[in-house]
Length: 279
Image 1 (cartoon, rainbow, N blue to C red):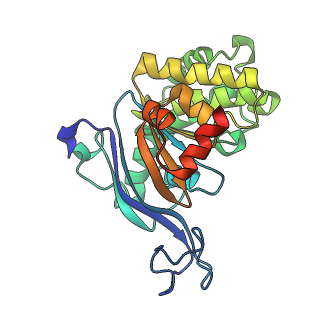
Image 2: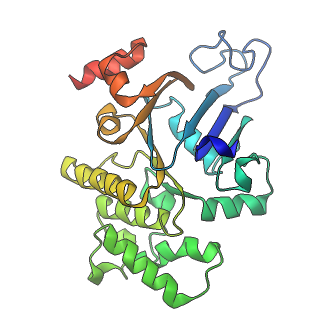
């Protein structure tokens, strides 16, 4: 597997909430949307496969409830997938399913190979701790014990995301939403992971702040070569950043391809509606 150049490979990932029943047939065509009307099971992600390459931004777009954030939660171990597998080229040579490893191995993968920026900064930050301590947290979890090295790295990253030197010792609870997102980005990069997961990073921000955050994401990708998965309900955000795009609806990928191709010649009805909304 590791010889094909991918950074992350996901195969037939599914996540359901509920027991399932013969009527819903493991998320088949008898569902009402992604919900079984008989047993109440919700199929949040259904049989999703994709790859991410180094230095690439893969966009995932879809309406609320389409499964895109649940997909990220499974990859970051915030949720347990119901089935499927995933492989990281930087872990065990890309040969071992990262969903089938021990709790200790999962912690190591999460701390060393993945970074995540949550839609709500309160999920990704300790709001009452200093911003420096927030960025250093992942380094501590990865085994770094030299305080000076952690502080130096934290100050560098906070500076990179334009947090003023005078405010680096302040807790994120004193910051605006845009500044909190920038602290999250610094934290996600603390251990130089090859893959960063971005979940609705501009939702709720003013347009001018959105633009600054998106410029920051693109600059980091360009300078560091990190791979990214960018989840958004807004195709305009995907258009600005994503090299390739997957469109999700009801837990399924209904269309995927190069972002330019999807924008210029959308095939699925839902994608056509999204593209039309940009015009």
